Structure formats: C-alpha cells, structure tokens
Image (cartoon, rainbow, N blue to C red; front, top):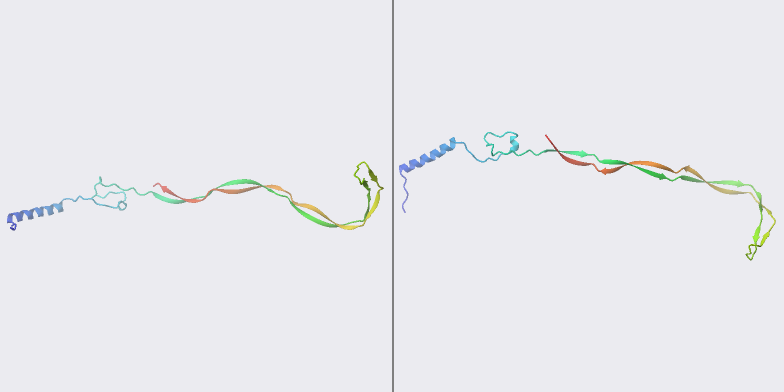
Length: 164
C-alpha cells in the first residue's frame, strides 16, 4: 500500500480553508438554543435572545392564607323548670277532747234493709303530740327562654389567589 502524499498546493489549500472557517466563526454571530431562567429576567427580554423563541413563563399567582371565622346561628329554646317544694314537719300539741260517734251497724247476715241504731256515745280522746306535714312552695314552676349559639360551619384556613 502506498502512503498518500501531500503536495504544497493541497497543504496550502487545507490551511486556507481552516483559517477561513476559524475567522468566519469569530466574526459571524453565533445562533444557538440557550436555556435561560425566566425568573431572573423579570419582564424584559435580553438583546441576544430572538423574541420569536422567547416565551416568558407566567409568574405563579400570589397566594395568601386567610382565616375564615366560624359561623354560628342563635337558637332560642324554651325550657320548663319544675316547681320546687319543701316539706316542713311541725310537732304540735292537740288538747284532749270528746268525740261523738254514732254507731250504725248492719245486719250480720248482710241484709241491707236491717239496721241497728245505737245511741250516740261520747268518747274522751286524751291530749297528745301530732306531727303535721305541710308543703311550702320554694320556687314556682316557670318557663325560661334559653339562647345559645349553634355551630354551622367551623373556622378554617383558606388559600386565595391575590391579583396584582
């Protein structure tokens, strides 16, 4: 196999072509796809970026967390309170006295038409202590209107988008 040989002319031509390419690379503007971070640019487009390729990414909407108060409704309810009584026991002295009793007895054979009538008799009842109970109304029964709050919606956090 024979080794290729370069002549002066082909060497000169190849150096000239390479030099022209290098020189052309330095003098002509470079066009290439460049990835940039749009958040660093703000609202402006850099001069070296062709505007037809630049699509700015929209900024995410500003969000805020707000506290939503709980919602209640007022309910009115009538409640009956029972009367309150107190039982009081008193020990009293009852004087001795006579009682008059008429004894009416019936027939032992249960015949209602036959009655035996006795003369009234006076009976002595001696004096004694008796315990008498009585009830005192401490508080009468009554209706009371009671108002209270009933929870409809509990309090919570909500995320809202803020328009700039």
